Structure formats: C-alpha cells, structure tokens
Image (cartoon, rainbow, N blue to C red; front, side, top):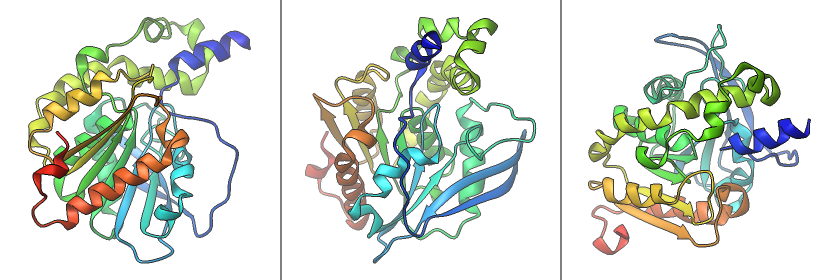
Length: 286
C-alpha cells in the first residue's frame, strides 16, 4: 500500500483530493456522444450564476481528474455570482466514458468530443475555457480547431513546450503490467495520456500561431509536475493573442486549490479583454 501511494504521487498531475462540499443549484448532465471512435457519454456539472451572468466558464481538468477539481473555484463568490460554470469530466474520466472504456490520449480526440458536448448546450457568450495541467493543451486544441466555441482562455500550470514535457522515467516504468497493478486503473489511464503528451505538443506547436483568443497564463515557480518554462513558451508562441502571465515565485502546481483568487483575477482579466473593443497594449503584459 505504501508503494502504491508513492508511485501514484509521482504520476499525479491534475487532481487534489478535497473534503466533500455541497453547492446550491448544481446539476449533473450525462449526455450520449458519438464522435469518431468515441461512442459513449460525456458528463458535466452546471452551476448557474446567482446574479447577472457575464460569461460562461468551461472547466477542463488535468490527469487524473474529474469535474470536482473545480469545486474550490466554483465556490468563490465572484464566480458563483457572476459566471455560469460548466465543469466537464474529460473523455476517459468520471462519467465521460466510451462504451469500450478506452482511453483517448490524443488532443484532437479530446477536443472533438468536448466540442460536440459543448455544442449541445445553449451557452451564453462569451465562453471562457479554464483549464488546469493536462487540460491546458486540450483547451488550446479546442480554441484552434473550434474557434467559434471559444472566446477566451485561462491556462493554469499548462504543459505546452514539447521539449520540456517528455515522459519521465516513472511514466516509462508505469507501462509495465506489474506496476500498473500496483498503481491502479486511474493512474494507468493517466500514464497513457502522459506517455504521448510530448508528441501531441509537437503537433500543437505548429498551430499555436492561429490562436487569437485572449489568454491568461498562470504558473508557479515551484511546480515540479509541469516545468515553469512552459508558461514562457506559451507567452512567446501566442503572438496573435492578448496575453497575461501571472508567474508566482511561491506557487506550485495546484493553483486552483491553493490560490483560487489568482484564477478569479485571471478570469476577470480575460472578461475585460473581451469587453474591450480594442485592447490597449499595456494589457497584453508581454
């Protein structure tokens, strides 16, 4: 048991276990989705704004993970009273499973499946993607392939640079069946996503210059799961977007849980960019 916990901690890239909390007006939707090789269902939790709705937020979690990774953010007063929040289980996780229970580690597949689910909802514009860790590249792929669905992004501890996102030694070890038995199903599925991430980011790198949506990037210097260099890489590559970088010298990987106020501020920054007809240069924070 001790070994299982130790190995799982090494592979852990997007989920923090928190005490259960209850929130008013949250509803769970599980909808049938058929896209490409995915035939199954996608699940998400909706929390309507309790006041005037400025925008719709779509939460995309990391790996491993589920929609409830966004509970702390959904509980923030400035979020609950101002934004409609849709927290998704990514394909392969939680309630978002294919009939054959396959993993879908390719960014294009993740984006296509989520896009179909997003299109099924009558969402109030603008739509801002809020993505953590492995969910960051998925958000970027959505913005690139389905630009009409995405108006802005908040990317938190997001891998992006393929040259600092290569599989680590423990990811390679976790391909072995005995190790998979030790770490369990979820960590094995997470490992499948991590093993090809650098290859997927190489493909994504060729498309980043087509991103035009305003994007806030949050990164902690003490993040040992996603190299801080990824944030600066994104800042350089998103040449057609208004970009804000919040680089916290004391921050770690789990900013949505440890410092949700930073995420709230980033969401408001993106919202302000969308409200501005012509964003002034000083707000680009390059």
